[in-house]
Image (cartoon, rainbow, N blue to C red):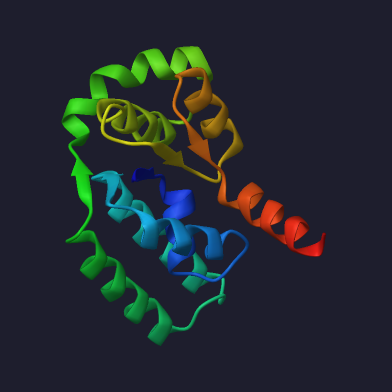
Length: 151
Protein backbone atom coordinates (compact mmCIF):
# COMPACT_ATOMS: atom_id res chain seq x y z
CA UNK A 1 0.00 0.00 0.00
CA UNK A 2 1.36 3.41 -0.98
CA UNK A 3 0.30 6.55 0.87
CA UNK A 4 0.76 10.26 0.33
CA UNK A 5 1.25 12.12 3.62
CA UNK A 6 0.40 15.76 4.11
CA UNK A 7 2.51 17.52 6.76
CA UNK A 8 -0.45 17.75 9.14
CA UNK A 9 -0.45 13.95 9.37
CA UNK A 10 3.23 13.16 8.94
CA UNK A 11 4.35 15.38 11.82
CA UNK A 12 2.33 13.14 14.14
CA UNK A 13 4.96 10.47 13.64
CA UNK A 14 7.44 12.71 15.43
CA UNK A 15 5.28 14.58 17.95
CA UNK A 16 2.95 12.56 20.18
CA UNK A 17 -0.62 13.81 19.82
CA UNK A 18 -4.03 12.60 18.72
CA UNK A 19 -3.60 10.61 15.52
CA UNK A 20 0.03 9.64 16.19
CA UNK A 21 -0.72 5.94 16.62
CA UNK A 22 -2.65 5.78 13.36
CA UNK A 23 0.12 7.62 11.49
CA UNK A 24 2.76 5.28 12.91
CA UNK A 25 0.70 2.23 11.89
CA UNK A 26 0.18 3.59 8.37
CA UNK A 27 3.88 4.39 7.93
CA UNK A 28 4.82 0.90 9.10
CA UNK A 29 2.30 -0.71 6.73
CA UNK A 30 3.15 1.44 3.71
CA UNK A 31 5.17 -0.01 0.86
CA UNK A 32 6.03 3.54 -0.18
CA UNK A 33 5.51 6.95 1.39
CA UNK A 34 4.97 9.89 -0.94
CA UNK A 35 5.41 13.51 0.19
CA UNK A 36 5.78 16.88 -1.45
CA UNK A 37 9.25 18.41 -1.46
CA UNK A 38 7.53 21.12 0.57
CA UNK A 39 6.81 18.75 3.46
CA UNK A 40 10.33 18.80 4.90
CA UNK A 41 10.24 22.59 5.21
CA UNK A 42 6.73 22.50 6.67
CA UNK A 43 7.81 19.91 9.26
CA UNK A 44 10.73 22.09 10.32
CA UNK A 45 8.45 25.12 10.55
CA UNK A 46 6.00 23.21 12.74
CA UNK A 47 8.81 22.03 15.01
CA UNK A 48 10.17 25.56 15.35
CA UNK A 49 6.71 26.83 16.32
CA UNK A 50 6.45 24.07 18.95
CA UNK A 51 9.86 25.05 20.30
CA UNK A 52 8.89 28.73 20.50
CA UNK A 53 5.66 27.76 22.28
CA UNK A 54 7.77 25.74 24.76
CA UNK A 55 5.90 22.55 23.81
CA UNK A 56 9.21 20.82 23.02
CA UNK A 57 12.73 21.30 24.37
CA UNK A 58 15.83 22.40 22.43
CA UNK A 59 17.12 18.80 22.65
CA UNK A 60 13.85 17.38 21.34
CA UNK A 61 13.83 19.97 18.55
CA UNK A 62 17.31 18.97 17.38
CA UNK A 63 16.63 15.24 17.77
CA UNK A 64 13.34 15.31 15.87
CA UNK A 65 14.82 17.41 13.05
CA UNK A 66 17.57 14.78 12.63
CA UNK A 67 14.99 11.98 12.69
CA UNK A 68 12.89 13.70 10.03
CA UNK A 69 15.95 14.27 7.81
CA UNK A 70 16.86 10.56 8.08
CA UNK A 71 13.33 9.44 7.26
CA UNK A 72 13.04 11.75 4.26
CA UNK A 73 15.82 9.79 2.57
CA UNK A 74 13.33 6.91 2.29
CA UNK A 75 10.29 8.90 1.15
CA UNK A 76 9.36 9.42 -2.48
CA UNK A 77 9.33 13.18 -2.97
CA UNK A 78 7.06 14.86 -5.50
CA UNK A 79 8.66 17.77 -7.34
CA UNK A 80 6.91 21.04 -6.46
CA UNK A 81 7.63 22.46 -9.92
CA UNK A 82 5.51 19.74 -11.49
CA UNK A 83 2.64 20.43 -9.09
CA UNK A 84 2.51 24.24 -9.31
CA UNK A 85 0.56 24.52 -12.60
CA UNK A 86 -2.42 22.78 -10.93
CA UNK A 87 -2.49 25.02 -7.84
CA UNK A 88 -4.46 27.95 -9.25
CA UNK A 89 -7.30 25.65 -10.28
CA UNK A 90 -7.32 23.93 -6.86
CA UNK A 91 -7.36 27.25 -5.02
CA UNK A 92 -10.32 28.43 -7.10
CA UNK A 93 -12.24 25.16 -6.77
CA UNK A 94 -11.64 24.45 -3.08
CA UNK A 95 -10.64 27.77 -1.44
CA UNK A 96 -7.32 26.25 -0.33
CA UNK A 97 -4.42 28.04 1.28
CA UNK A 98 -1.25 28.25 -0.80
CA UNK A 99 0.66 25.42 0.86
CA UNK A 100 -2.42 23.18 0.97
CA UNK A 101 -2.92 23.67 -2.76
CA UNK A 102 0.68 22.58 -3.34
CA UNK A 103 0.17 19.50 -1.15
CA UNK A 104 -3.01 18.51 -2.98
CA UNK A 105 -1.52 19.20 -6.42
CA UNK A 106 1.51 17.09 -5.48
CA UNK A 107 -0.70 14.19 -4.43
CA UNK A 108 -2.67 14.45 -7.67
CA UNK A 109 0.58 14.13 -9.62
CA UNK A 110 1.00 10.63 -8.12
CA UNK A 111 -2.67 9.67 -7.77
CA UNK A 112 -2.20 6.46 -9.78
CA UNK A 113 0.65 5.40 -7.50
CA UNK A 114 -1.01 5.99 -4.13
CA UNK A 115 -3.87 4.28 -2.38
CA UNK A 116 -4.50 6.91 0.30
CA UNK A 117 -4.07 10.63 0.89
CA UNK A 118 -3.35 10.93 4.63
CA UNK A 119 -4.15 14.29 6.18
CA UNK A 120 -5.54 15.91 9.35
CA UNK A 121 -6.76 19.18 7.80
CA UNK A 122 -10.53 19.01 7.19
CA UNK A 123 -10.64 21.54 4.34
CA UNK A 124 -7.81 19.72 2.55
CA UNK A 125 -9.43 16.32 3.14
CA UNK A 126 -12.70 17.60 1.70
CA UNK A 127 -10.88 18.91 -1.37
CA UNK A 128 -9.04 15.59 -1.78
CA UNK A 129 -12.33 13.68 -1.69
CA UNK A 130 -13.78 16.05 -4.31
CA UNK A 131 -10.69 15.30 -6.41
CA UNK A 132 -11.58 11.60 -6.05
CA UNK A 133 -8.70 10.61 -3.79
CA UNK A 134 -9.22 7.97 -1.12
CA UNK A 135 -8.40 9.63 2.18
CA UNK A 136 -7.47 8.75 5.74
CA UNK A 137 -7.87 11.22 8.58
CA UNK A 138 -5.68 9.96 11.47
CA UNK A 139 -7.87 11.88 13.94
CA UNK A 140 -10.98 10.03 12.79
CA UNK A 141 -9.19 6.68 12.48
CA UNK A 142 -7.82 6.93 16.00
CA UNK A 143 -11.23 7.92 17.32
CA UNK A 144 -12.78 4.99 15.46
CA UNK A 145 -10.20 2.59 16.94
CA UNK A 146 -10.89 3.99 20.42
CA UNK A 147 -14.65 3.53 20.14
CA UNK A 148 -14.27 0.10 18.56
CA UNK A 149 -12.06 -1.03 21.45
CA UNK A 150 -14.76 0.07 23.92
CA UNK A 151 -17.41 -2.18 22.35
